[in-house]
Amino acid sequence: MHIFSGLQRFALIILGMALSTGMGFAQERTITGKVTSEDGEALPGVQILIKGTAQGALTGSDGVYSIAVTNPEFTLVFSSVGYVSKEIKVTTQSVIDAVLSEELIIDRIIRVTGYTAQAVDNITGSVGIADPERLAVIPSGNVTGQLQGRLSGVTVTGSGLPGTTSKVHIRGFASFGNNDPLYVVDGVPTQDISTLNPNDIESLCVLKDAGAAAEFGSRASNGVIVITTRLGRKEIQVGYNMYTGVQLPGDGPAKELLNTQEFADLQWLVYENDGTVENHPIYGLSTNPTPSLPSSVTM
Image 1 (cartoon, rainbow, N blue to C red):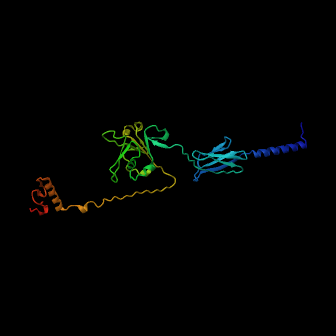
Image 2 (image 1 turned 180 degrees about the horizontal axis):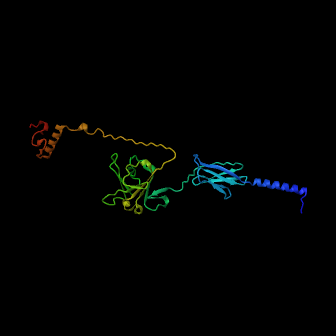
Image 3 (image 1 turned 135 degrees about the vertical axis):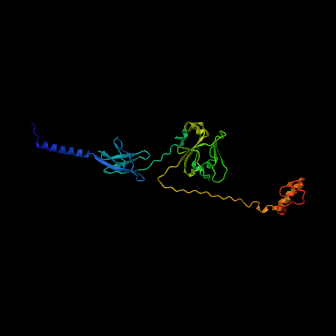
């Protein structure tokens, strides 16, 4: 039986203390925190990874996360779709909160054509796109009036009277009957957009070729105008537009009009110059030296 000496026992005690100290340094600790947006709203589903590893966690519906770590110093990477990724170096902290800012991506312009949305560079059909900001330059109370001269192949005619709507024809007159195009506002087909506020338009596309019939059938024979209205925004924005105008008829010929006697004398002069004999229903025979005014006729 092997018997340890006093020196050996002391060495074993020192070795055990060293091992316990090393295990204390390698002990796991938990990092918690909350991820919010710049507006202070909790962000669920944010991915938190320890940089350089596959170890990570996700935030809950309240934006709170929890992750277990063993290294004394490391870097947490916070990432989410639509937000800018953020890295935070951690040393001795146990609570790490992160604020993510929205990522603005301007890649391609998307237009709504029919019931789908396509990038402008992928549109192959005959589609006319009208910029709502350019349409608003024309002071008109209806959308059809603002389309005047804005798109090729689209003819807009109107009487110009206040409150009246204009007629829109796409690719000219297709038949002797109704040539009005089909309007689709936020996916709902309609034949009248006179009540639509031009300031509420987000995008306006005109489908001019026969390909529109694949989505709307025979109603698209005269063309389709697809309108998407604006959606609500978080921020409160107040806008005010006003157009005023005055039309003056002028003085007119009221000061130079002929009276009854002068008008009758002028008619008699016409008969004299023509050399004819006429029986005027009011002034009598033109052979009379002077016309008979109605007020001077005796009954």
